[in-house]
Image (tube, rainbow, N blue to C red):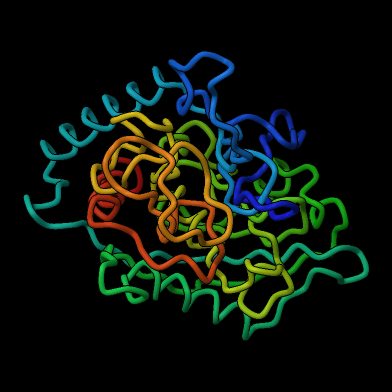
Length: 314
């Protein structure tokens, strides 16, 4: 999840509906390091989903090194089984799809927390631009596009504050596993998302929660260009943070995103937090940089999106 009170794009860890602020980074990132050498991070992965940049805790549920390996093995099994049924992407190609998007505007009882139809249209445009690789000549076109399937608005103070989150999501979620639901709320984070491999067990909460002020034209300083939704949607497609696993070769399971020890704050050109090759990928949508610093998904991330879509959402 992404929090924006300080800087991290992480969201809080949600356990039994309780937000835990300032939680440590996923154990996956620090699994084999002594406690006094653990990298500090405010990005946490809650069991229900993940979060984005600019916050005080992980934006996805915590995933251990062991579970990370199990997820990769399970993904390979699903892909093999689907290929046997003729559901596969040709070698060298990528999956491509138009993703229906439902926007749920969670206002309080007085109507605070609303966004305009123009902002919603601009948010969909940002998703289409970023996933099409249009913000940088080095960016990959993932092959995925987004279309607005519907907008609903609720006046409920508890829901607006992201309380009873499992309940309100189950009551309001629309569409199937290939449908992105975005709940706009007011909380201490920028965003929180679920992973695709969790859909089978918890379909009712699948989707992303986004701070409503982070939409284009919103009031979230440094995070109001709509790219929190891009970051969170990246998790929803199956991407980890670029700092997942810290300074390890496994890292985020993507070979062309250099390892980094901790989330980025701002847009520090030349940041290099690991001795492994490559500067920190501060311009990557899956780091915690400012919206204005974000410019790309890599080809490796695009390939992973395709793989995870085929395995869990196709």
